[in-house]
Image 1 (spheres, rainbow, N blue to C red):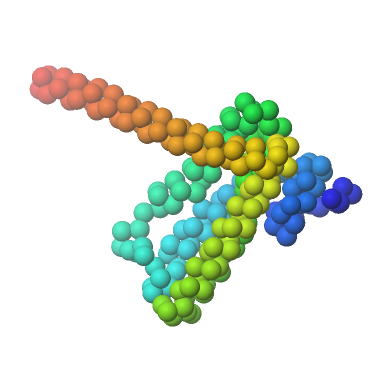
Image 2: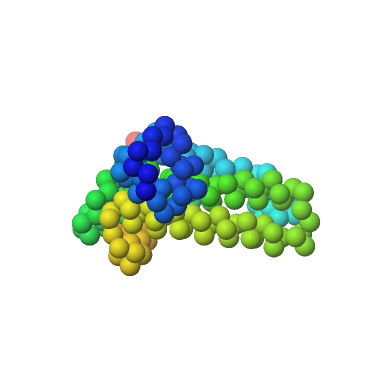
Length: 211
């Protein structure tokens, strides 16, 4: 670990991507977490996801442009990211983790870097490759996902000061917590929708009786 390392905030994501193991230890030691950089990366993740859906070559694009909807992309990127952050922070507080919500957000955002790069490379390559060369795109996607997963595990381990087994267990429980959070959110939205329909029905009925 290079504890005398001095980097501006925007360079830390690139550094930890190149050094996924000691990089997060350096990040923790130097307190290089910057929520602004993390938020920009999450926004970039959303934009790249939309770009991939719209710009992927027609031979590999499964989306139908005429019925394109941006809401699912928002839900699968920004919304899901913050549900992950909240779930991880909640559980790691119980598991005596040392990371704050800001730090968890930064580590999680930085870990997305390889996946975002693979998405960009795949989107561009899909416009020049033939369908029989789809295995090349699958390989790039697999490398990006694997690299991001390694970074996430390494980042959470360094951030919370866990052992590898405890880090994996915390990530597993975080996924469970995400499912519970999303389930509760869906229930609340459904409940508020029913309440709204109930009062709106009463309101329209009163207007009808007045007329």
